[in-house]
Image (cartoon, rainbow, N blue to C red):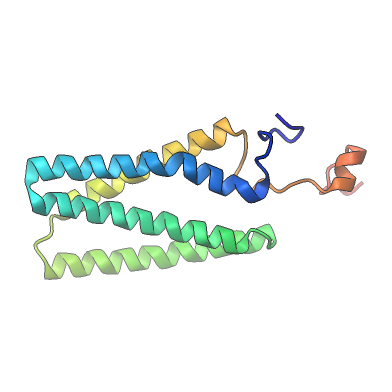
Length: 158
């Protein structure tokens, strides 16, 4: 471990990628398993609906990754505002998509919802576990070199 608690070679630039690589396979496996269960239990329509739920979660998490990548060098406040705005826009888009699907198709929205919930819970849990194992945070900004050498926090007023 390094002084800042991160694994050697796991810098702030690579942290998000490492967390995603460690958690995404678990989320995808959970979503695919849910789709497989619905395929067996409910037929092709249920399996496709659960796959739609997996796709919605991949879209939601994927947009977050893009926003974080685009704002990683900006001030933390910019990143937070971008993520909140991103979240609000995605909720409106999701509501519109689900409303239009409920009005226009006979898609099994229960299977879609289960696919969304299972994929989200497993993905968030795996992401949290990966962050704990790397002893890092999403917004883990490196300490400035001069502050690290003197032993002072770069945000302190002294």
